[in-house]
Length: 615
Image (cartoon, rainbow, N blue to C red; front, side, top):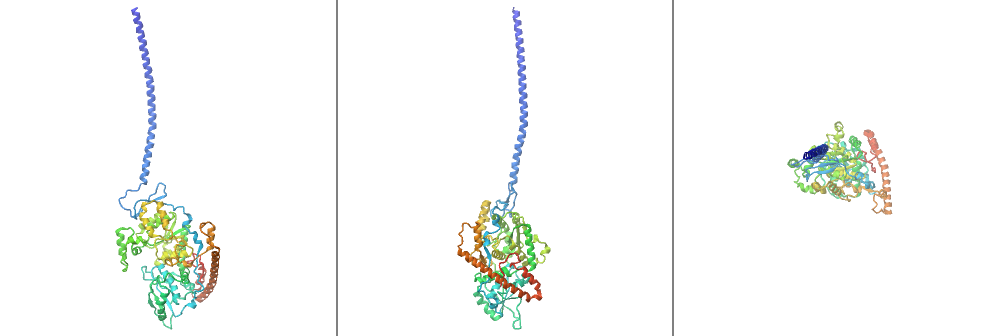
């Protein structure tokens, strides 16, 4: 019994061990499966995690690459001329220079959204040149004393001489004298040996003014002998009474008087008929010779082929001009020494304070400043610019900021061949005449200075319809250029546009009698109220009061009278021209007939529509 019991116990223990072994095997199998699952998932997770980490790392590296590309280079020195880099959108220039704050300045490549407003003035359609003489103006036969001959010698460059020629016509009329064709300045800085007839059409000059002033090419023999002229100098801004008291007694006694260094020797304030004679001489009688006109017209045509509209910039930045100004332009000790050495040429030139000159607006803008001003006014980098200048101080280093802002940069040397310019190149005045023609024909004329060419062109463009003419308000802009690193581009551009109000060549920017007459020939510009009414009806001036009917009728009457005078003058001028042609038929009659045909429009080279012919 005991044995059987032990046997049963042994059998149960064996079953129990067998069961435990089976359970252990089952547990091991489950554990193995779990471990396999976990291992597989780890491998799968690991396979997904590595690409994710790689992608994130790539993004971070790309971000730092962009930051490195856009960041300006570390610079431990002031930058003398600006640098620019492309931004990520390629629509701005990263600009820095030596003027004022040298921090970077982002400038848009595009000009803005002002559209045609920057290319023309809607008001200009209401104005036209009107230099016809009045009924009180005496004709040449009643005015001229045949025994008096007035000679003048001009001074300076081409446009300074042009003021002298224009004023000489009026001086001869005041003195009841015959004018001898003016002599040009051959001794000044430019050493140009050109005569009047080398630059201006002398036959047209004599013919056009023949009803106002008698003009001869040389002093004739008087009582069978040559008369040596008596030389004298008239004070600047001399009025008619001044001429009568100073020059008339000598003319009566000596018969032939030569006025030397004749520039700005006539008052700005004269009676309207004398002022209109000035305008007829300047805007109609003075015409360039045929070779100059033909080359000038070629240059204009080539600019038009490059762009429908273009800007002409008269850039005075020659070393002598900068030295004379007494200003400093950021070139360091080298600039100061070089310009100071040039100043020694003028013994009477007083030393000037550069900072004071700039505060007073007497310093010409640098090419860089001109570029910034134009971009702020709305002209984008796609605009084509014709630059009329001499040898720029600093050369390409000085011009590079302007060229980077306006890469479509042209001059007569880039759009004409050396062979084409060869007949003109030795003569500074003839080269200046070519620039004058292109600048006059431009859609917008800009100057960095207020010199003689700038004044003469500004007056001419006003006379022929107020074509946009931008003169920098240097007195206000100088501080803005110094501080521009402390403001955004939008703020800078807004202030430039504000400061330039009144300096854009638009009507009513100057009151009659203010400024140089050659720059503001207000007496010779008339307003057409009919056109003004049409503009208002189109919504151009909706907030302004309409002119009353009396003013409209008066304007119509004045305009009709003006047109009648013009037609009468045309008939008289045609009769005179026919007579004049007969007088010189044996010499160059064929050429004169051609000139009379070609010169129906009274302008430098027939590029503008004239409003009248002279009687």
